[in-house]
Length: 132
Image (cartoon, rainbow, N blue to C red; front, side, top):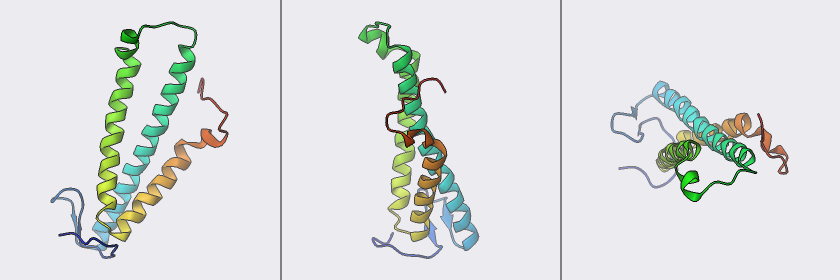
C-alpha cells in the first residue's frame, strides 16, 4: 500500500511490481530513467507542435476534403504520437502519485530539461515554426 502523502525513502514500487527500488542505487537509476522518460514526453509534445505548424503552412493554399485530411499520413502520424504522449503522460502521473519525493523531483527535473531542450523555439509567441 502506497502512502497518500509525500514521503522520502528508497523503498518504492514504481508502475509495475517488477520495478521496485530498495536502495539508493536503484532509486538513482529510477530517477535517471524517469527524467529521460519525461524528456521524451516533452520532445513528443514539441514535435507534434512542429508537425502541426509545418503541415498547416504546407497545406495553406491546398484545398483538401475532410476525408483526405482524416486519412492522410501526417494525421495518422499525429494520432500515433498523441497516443504515445498520452500513455507516457499517464505513466508520469502515476509515478508522481507514488508521492515519493525523489520520484516527484525526477519528474520535475525531466520536465524542466525537456522543455529547455525541445521548446526553445517558443520564446517568441508570434513565431510560427515553418521550415526547420
